[in-house]
Length: 112
Length: 120
Image (cartoon, rainbow over all chains, first blue to last red; front, side, top):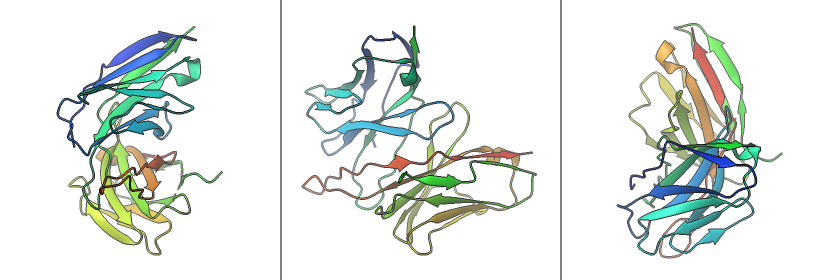
């Protein structure tokens, strides 16, 4: 699976959009970009995933560049409850196993 | 709530004791994963089941660790002769495969709340 690079930490004011970047320059054609977040002492929570088109759901939007070497997770109106560690994961299909390889993620702090 | 559940949520044990954790996946999910997370790190893959078959094990899964999923539903993870280095959060996730065409998976893993183990 391709390696990802994320900033260690970011701050965002409540009510503003939080834009979390992720670099995955070695991504290959059949690898998806997944985003999970982990609020303190809880299990990771799935947010969104995409292959090459931009995706949006009730939680967030995922913007993937045309060359697929980077992506941005957008939380449109961040709240204090969005304070968490956000993980960007690139995962391919290996036939049977499809484990997730987590990095250290981006710690997002939403402030008043 | 029909999410992934794990029991116990917390476990404190003395070095050398055996411990067992249980994971109940989302009912229609045939894949089940175990991960381990130490402080300040992201979760690390341990092992994976498809139905009752254990299909992959990480090198992190030493011979003191054993996982089972006897009927393809719930799973147990046992650690024998615990060591202080086993202190961590043990996470379970489940999924069902979803093909997006051309063999590319859209599988999404859903995690439980984890079992936090402290070995004294």
